[in-house]
Length: 134
Ligand SMILES: [Zn+2]
Image (cartoon, rainbow, N blue to C red; front, side, top):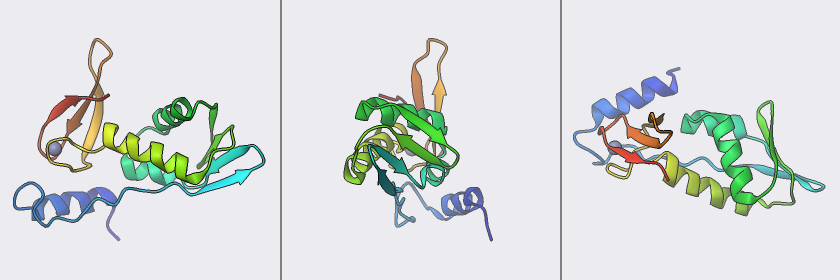
């Protein structure tokens, strides 16, 4: 079984130029369970792995966007508020647009680099584009 990294590399090799019939990025969806006044994202670790983002970064983003405290609990994320799956997935797709997908080539092969002045830049490993991450 090939690792995700290898699959990405092979996918890139097979791409003639930018996005031409390449495999499509399937954005991950949060699976959320409500427990009393808490919402628990069951597959939080898988989402972070797939997006290649620091779980703390995504936890902070979701907590801020949904205006509730968030806490990482092993592979899960606990949001202290009655928040529905749909609301969480809306914020998650905003996150993916802002911090994962390259504006130039629409691929997810990016990383966040912090500049000296603390500005977060989204750097694309597929096409080399750099843009400030909002
Ligand atoms: Zn790109």
